[in-house]
Amino acid sequence: MQYKGSCHCGSVRFNVDIDLSNPIVCNCSYCQRRGSILAFTPIENFELEQGEEYLTEYRFNTRQIQHLFCKICGMQSFARGQTPDGTSMAAINVRCLEDVDLDSLQVAKVDGRSR
Picture 1: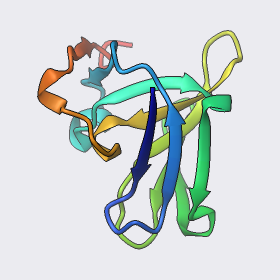
Picture 2: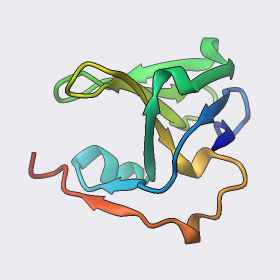
Picture 3: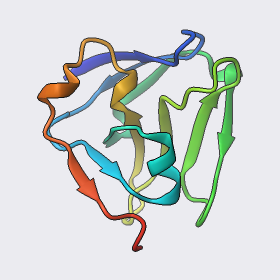
């Protein structure tokens, strides 16, 4: 399904075609503190509408995921990376999407802490 998303202040805006039937929450040291609900889609399904100049990145651990934040409000609305097979993907913070009923989602828990 198509969704619009943004950071908190609206400086970063995007469109994404994404399936929200399998979102996750992760308990790794980073995700637990951030508290986002994540859903994944091939990078071709993601379009940054505005705000590239407002993005700054953070990489940790294996440094494979480009966690992107708005320099103005600090919100991480998405990240870019690759799946283990090398497919480029976008990890979307579902909490940053418009018109999503978060209570209706069937969220899976992922044990990223043990990896």
